[in-house]
Image (cartoon, rainbow, N blue to C red; front, side, top):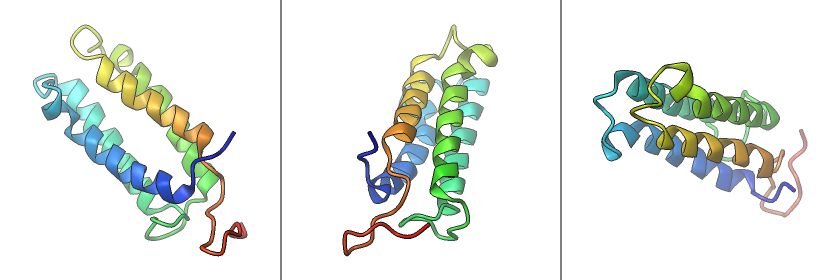
Length: 124
């Protein structure tokens, strides 16, 4: 069931990206280069495609919301797998897994279209 408004998803997108980029220093794994690079690249990437998304908080409104959600889901899966793919699972695991799973869940619960202030859905 898609219950999360795109406006809320937009706020979460930017906060999630910033938190993921800061996570190596917040959670003490900045000394693990691969884990740090993955966190910073994925966080910055999420912010970038949020800026390009056609929703309330997108600046350029190029990327359709369904494509944004696909990127969230695929990116989340890769983020969950990244400790194993890039060989740092023995030193850093949970931040990448938690951020990744959050992204996957968000892609399934977010509405596909923004809602106008009148309560109507915006035409695609």
